[in-house]
Image (tube, rainbow, N blue to C red; front, side, top):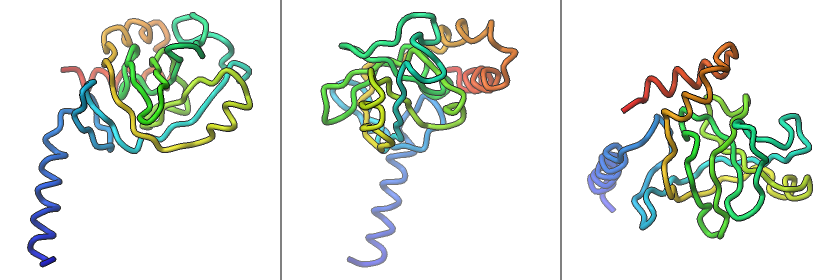
Length: 164
């Protein structure tokens, strides 16, 4: 393949990726799907209720390991209420929690109902299909009373900078 064709192909790909609407400044590619948007190469980790955060999510409800499972993220990147599916699985999640180690990252922490399941998941890079974007406004309402915390202030600043 000629050098010109390689550069032309890379340029076309760059234009395509740059034109995709993104909710934040994530570095992952978004591809339209039947459900909404596919975000590729998302770093995921796992957590469980026996860790420091306990059995409840950020809004005081029990963490869910059933039909729609709990997940934590930086709400300025994935707002509270964002529903997604891990591609290649039947695993559906909702962002209903956040964690200090996630602020400023594109990492999503997936809730697992046991330490064994958490360890088994480890750290994986996966593609996700966004089924429904969460609410920046609801995220701000939950975070506002906690704004004395520096990490929460960072999330609030990120949400406000990306309001559309």
